[in-house]
Amino acid sequence: MREYFVSVTVMISLCVAFFALSFRGRRDISLKMAFGILITYAVLTPLSNFLIFDGELPKIEQPSLDFSEDYVDVCEKAFTEGVRRLISERYGLAYEDVSVAVFGFSFESMRADRISVVLSGRASLADRHAIEEYVTGEGLGRCEVEIRIG
Image (cartoon, rainbow, N blue to C red; front, side):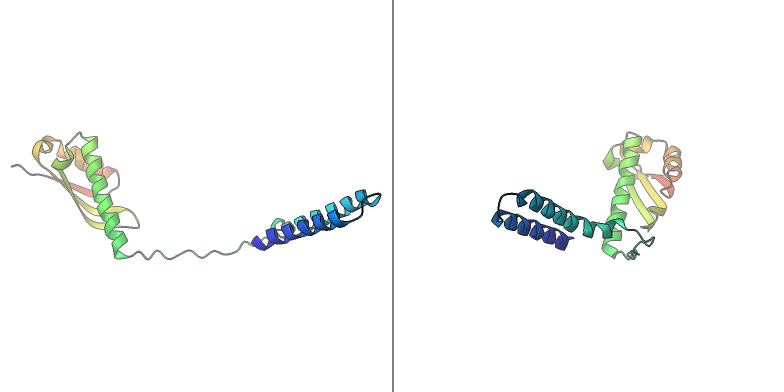
């Protein structure tokens, strides 16, 4: 694409230079017409390659989803914090009173086999069955809620 713009710029520059050095008079209109046709041809010829479609699209290979362990760990930590924030905001619980642990996290499906939630402090008074049903129902993983007193 860069070569296209360079060639068009050079063509226009040459036409302008030749037109400036040419004789004035009766040929002025015919020179303008000739240079206009030449520049139009130079601009439209490469564009025809873009416009002609032969029915085949280039094949783009999909990159493999081979994630390093660091990415998976960061994602698992973000997932855990997201579940913790979701529970504390939805049920009006203090963030520090909710603890979440994730087991069997799957990066591809963004869910866990088991999510363990521990409620402490004032959060221990929340309806643990409602929290279990909500988290499990959202498709995040099977949720188990424990209450820590003291």
